[in-house]
Amino acid sequence: DIDGLRIMGMSILESLSEVCTKDLARFAMTIFTRLCSDNELKKEKLGNVNLRALDYILLGRARTCAGLNPVDAINQGLDCINGVNKSPKICYQAKLVKAIGITCLARYYASESQVVLAVQQYQSALNLLPAEATLWGEAAIYFDRIGNLALAQHCYSTHTRLIQSQLVSK
Image (tube, rainbow, N blue to C red; front, side, top):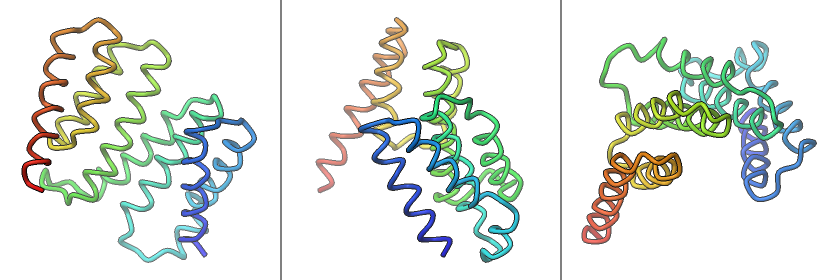
């Protein structure tokens, strides 16, 4: 069952964030490669483009955990979304999946010390989901780490403002 396979793959990725082993990362890659294969996609209901895109993006995350380059897989996921959602007013779910992909690219470029690309990707993700407090916090930490204090300060203050507004609304 495709949904069960996806959930299993996501669970493995979640555990990789705590204890990263190459074997587990390769197992996750196998799952998401299978989900991305044409045979599996034909079984899935047409119109599940966001899920298909997410599978490619999660394959990219698994590749990163295995120490491999995730860019092609993530870009394939982003192409899925861009190919269908040509309108600038794409649905929130598509924006979320796209932001996950862009953030994964930013993290990869940051880990490879490709500062210009990492900064561009973080800024793209923030433009896509301007109300996502955790994303602002992550970007702030990265900008602080690379010494871009103006951007870091802007991200920290936006992060704080978003958190405070969420607390007030509850």
